[in-house]
Image (cartoon, rainbow, N blue to C red; front, side):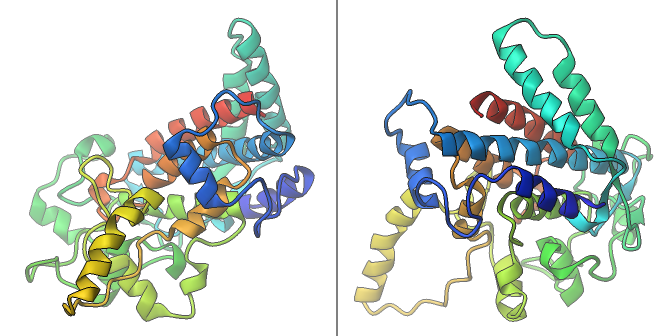
Length: 338
């Protein structure tokens, strides 16, 4: 079975909330609590513990997916069609996920006994990448640190440009902004240069789309599939939405929205004409689906993991190996909460 099919069976066995809007409160309530504090030290509710257990299991398998992708990247292969359908389970990772959850409880109560690492290693062994029909070998751009490609010799900028994609690859809904730009033949912003070379970072964007799908049960950009012009504008227009120098997450928070509103209203009142604003890079309400039912602290951690992958600027995205490690750590934290 593939990871998408595994997710469906795992969720059926571990019901935590209704994917379409159950759980304890809306996503906005979770986000505001995470940012503003709220009552601290409260014991998680039964619903929150169930949501944490289910999210932890999904993150264990997602960590294995990211690790298998990191291995490809470190051998000079970019998959370019990273989605849950294209990662297979050699065997059901569910029992290993359950052992990891039990080991996390023991680790919290006593000394570390390596059972947690062993369980995650079994999950890692269960997952493998498949369907390399869109993949490319030896592709890395001039802006990609060579440490991401230890199996390949350094290449000049000219050689790197020769290795860029000449067409968009992979399912449309999981294509990174730079891959969408290649499909349209766009020049680099501000000049007539070729579109940015496609690198391993394109796979990391697709990983972010996959995580949203695995946690929420819905495609991140599924609602844009019937409106390609809007989808294209969403991914390619301008810089990262509300990008900060720290992480460029492209996901607006409620506080940021509140700071922008007075300026926008003032501009409208003065009659100033403004160009239509491009749709938000990563719609907040779609990320909200991933955190419903989770505690404020866990919701904030999930958001940070998503933000580390879904940046318009490829250079701001985490590596697949870093994503794998962070997902495993977050899974452990959620297991302690469950």
